[in-house]
Length: 215
Length: 318
Picture (cartoon, rainbow over the protein chains, first blue to last red):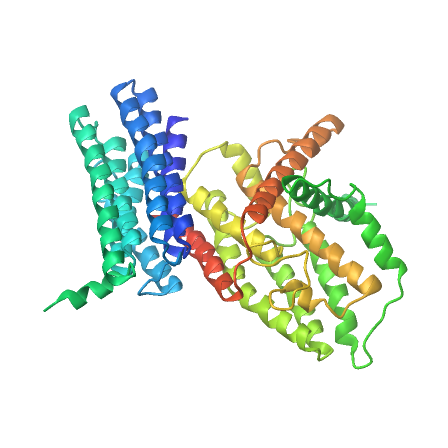
């Protein structure tokens, strides 16, 4: 039962990343990130119950509260405020991005079976999904023009790292987790302000215009 | 009479019975989706038997055919209907076996459905009306992507059971009991999008309008009237029921009658109806909360599901 929930949640996270790659509507992408974080919270809560580690409930609550509710809300508010065009403009078109993501997922899964704990069972899937998410997140970061989508890609990478940390290792100390959550929140806030500044300066969120700053 | 003959007759009877049952229930599913959608919009929706009234009205009209139409135009709806009816006999519904499972499995199912689509698309081209041609080309554009995705998704389940035969597949899944693999969820997500695309539901096509810019399926059958149109509509409803049944069979097979007994069959019917309605509710929810995609976006959506289905298959091996 525990294994089923973990595997389902991890697979759900992978599906959400894929939909993020295939999506062009900015708000849907943010909601997908929220759903992904919710699933991460479910993973943490499931492990907390099954292994009787109560400190993981704090992690789950932080993940859901911060990443599934606060950050999506904050990003949507930022977009509303700066009133930009709500469509993602990738450097690479959607089918090509999907193909690359497919290859990255295959690589992620293949690499996961190289780990001693990741050869089979639940941790095989958890590590595989996390590595794939990590690679796809990095890929999204370099192929998306808008600053907001780059933030989302960064957060996806962070979710991937968190998935391995919670699901496979015996967990981080609570202090580290609190610090990480705080870090993520601050990063999003700072990046949100940065995005507003970029929009003020260039009247667009297109980060490729930043190259004009060169002297 | 010797035993093989009796067995053959029994199989044929069973196939006819199952096809007739699916034909009888299909308009009800269509109405149920319309009703659920209406409820979400705060309306009452059509009466439960509206699907049958519509079909009866169309059948009672005289067929009006274009003077330039050839036999291809007449054959189109008939082949489409026959293909849909044939396909119903290849899918397990109430018991973990399909009536004609000895004839073929997944490949035959996909092939028969493709035959129906081909017949309708050629028939749409036959009258020379621009709408028919436009609808046919759009339908084929989507089908070219949806068909491989459907096959890959089905292959993922087939790989788990080690057989391409749907009857064997469902029996193996039942024996194994519920066990989750990430590929199940990926294949399910992929196939769910395919079902929406193939049944012409909203993000892909809007079944309720005849807006020339966006229609796909409706553009293909625009020329048809009377009994011809009734056949097309009925076959589409059957196809929708068929796809939902297929999803139910592959991903939530629990509840299928283990043996043929009156009580078990009634329970299996209730379970099947409940599961199909649940999926139909999910389709309705997607339809009510999304806007129709621009036509050039549709291949992107379908390619996402192709990617998911491919990944599901790949993860099985990794």
